[in-house]
Every structure is written in structure tokens, then in C-alpha cells.
Image (cartoon, rainbow, N blue to C red; front, top):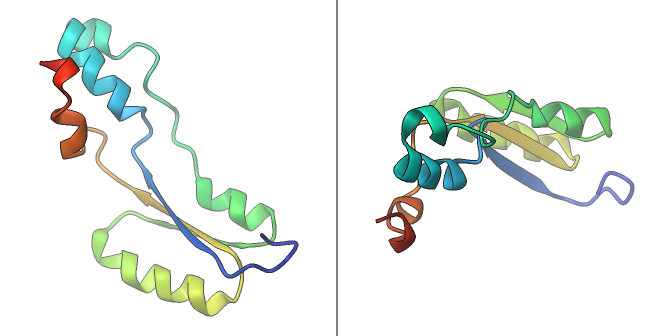
Length: 101
């Protein structure tokens, strides 16, 4: 995208985990065995955008999402906003999967 200067703004909801997999493992195996292979280190995805010549920004407070998006658009570069989210929060679709009941 940087090479062709494409007008792109991406958002990563970053919880440092594979939470869809994690939810199922915790449901089946409990906390002790359910945390295996699904927790990631903290990855600053916004820095990848910056390293490649785009615009990157991290957001830790929900009230800062809109201003970050405005700055990304104003940058004129392909952009990525890395939004840190609670690793204990699960999407409703994840929690409603019948295979975990």
C-alpha cells in the first residue's frame, strides 16, 4: 500500500491472544490448561506500518480512537491503528458458539 500510496486505514483490535481459540480451551480444560498456545506477546502492529513508510498509532483508551483515525486520514499515508483491548473480553459470537457448550 505504501508503494502505491493507497488510501487505507486499518484497525487492529489487539488483545495479545488468540481469544476465539482461548475461550474454547478455557471452557473445555479450565484456566490451568486452557491458556496453552493461545497467548501472544504484546505486538506493536502500529510500528510495522511506520517501519514500512506508512502511518501507525497505538490507542489504549477508547476515547482516543476517533482522534487517532482523524490523524491517520490526515497523514495521507496508508495507516494502521493498533487498539489495545482487554484480553478477558470475548466477542459475543465467540461465546455463543455451540461447540463450547
